[in-house]
Image (cartoon, rainbow, N blue to C red):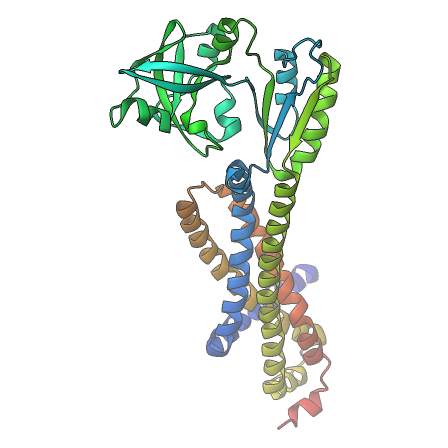
Length: 405
């Protein structure tokens, strides 16, 4: 029966230590408020950055047309020999590149622009026409502002539909909605199904975009799928994907005359800019947590000094070194975990607010994982910063501590 009694005493002692620690932290709440806020802000910042970091990186990579299309690779054929046969990307080559790890989208299009003179409402309008496949919109960061964009079905069946750039649509139709109207291109009539907008580079706003198969079949060999636009998921994937394109093409068709263009300078600038931003954020979080950790250490040192006689009395009444050590460690841990709980609550508010403002959907599971990691980190911070003051208190001589003034 002795063993169960000893375990009960340990449990009661631990309960008492926890009760005293919480009560002591609450009593010193005014002096502890700054420490709690420092650790809470650092914890909230850390959770917010970890939770939103991947989503923001994905969105930034998706919208890098604003920074010069740093994650976009353009491949094409530069034939200098007039006797060489015309080159085009085969469907199996495009599908193999799409399957590469790190590729967000890959689109085959015509590099040749066919300038057509449209007789429209009494005027001749010079209109550039290109053929694109169903992945062109995603690879180029484009979206429909009216109607819809053609999909794999229209491309596969070579339908006579077209999408207009917003400037061309305005030039042809003014303020009227062009969706559902018909446009004479060459000797055929094409139905307008949408107007494209978004991040458009160059003069694509004045283009008429047709399904790739429709253009190739009707151009008598003049236009072909000789341009490949590859959008990578992140800037980290660009060098790997760029190097793999040539090898994949060499396995399936003639690699001569292939030219792969990577925006190297823009990519270096983007990576450098993001690195400095990440460094600044990391240093800020580390500084905040360091201040909080120092605050816990300083607060516990003051607590040991002001409660020296209390420590002496407890030792005189039979308290062991480990009891004193456990009490002060528990107080430091209570302080850091209280700050962690406040920080997690603040982080949840920040993540939800930032998600609404940035139009992203943070993952709740990702948030909870980061919250647990931050909670464990705060516990480690409390133990690490409270260990020396607790050890100092545990080593005090009972007689000297009682006589302390």
